[in-house]
Image (cartoon, rainbow, N blue to C red; front, side):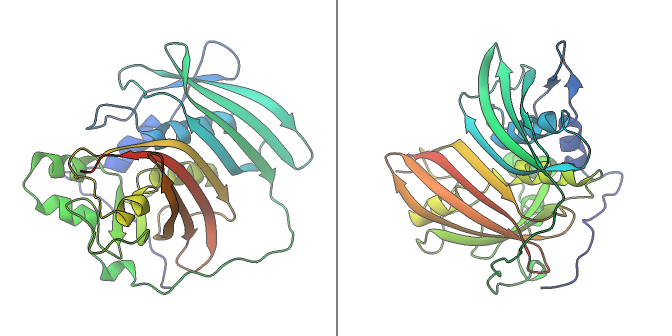
Length: 297
């Protein structure tokens, strides 16, 4: 599916949103054992971004893990909106450490109450039977419009904010939902995404950055099914729960293909799913998220 390459480098006078993001994924030890604290990435909508709390919770859980074990699944519930100005405290509960697997529960707390509760499972690197779905044929990312270039070209404060602060380049096959409604109602989409710069660190950090990135696009197939977009009047969208499974190592420095759909929406809730492939066509992760989707009149 193409030749992998590193993410773009930035000149001194250009924004470095990924570098800023990575600083927020650095946790500080808390006052008690197995507790950690962190700040929140500034957001234009004024509340904590769910993918940030999910990624930080993963890193907190990993800090209690023996070397050589990586997360293969997480299941999280977003319980309350987060306050951007209040530090987040992460408490880690060591549920089990077996021969092959370890389990952790993490509560992300503000004002003494959980804004996210997450279960995660870690595994030793082991051999076993192997198979995987193959990706569909879609245009390569180099053939598609860049969200970074789109925001750069628009002389509007909100577009310029996203250009300077959005840490990922997103390229929709069916056209993006940033400026207007989709061309046709269909509960599916395909997109490529990679970071706007190199992600340092080990595989744990790459998996955490994937968790951060995917939360922003998981409910887009729900919007597409009803000809909605992110600027639709009266729309309200919020993540309710999130599940991820990592099947293979991920490289956030290279393009990843998200094959997404929405099997159902009802009662003000919609379900989005994604299969994530690398450029070699290997399935690296599977994701599911249910969210609140209201309005859009």
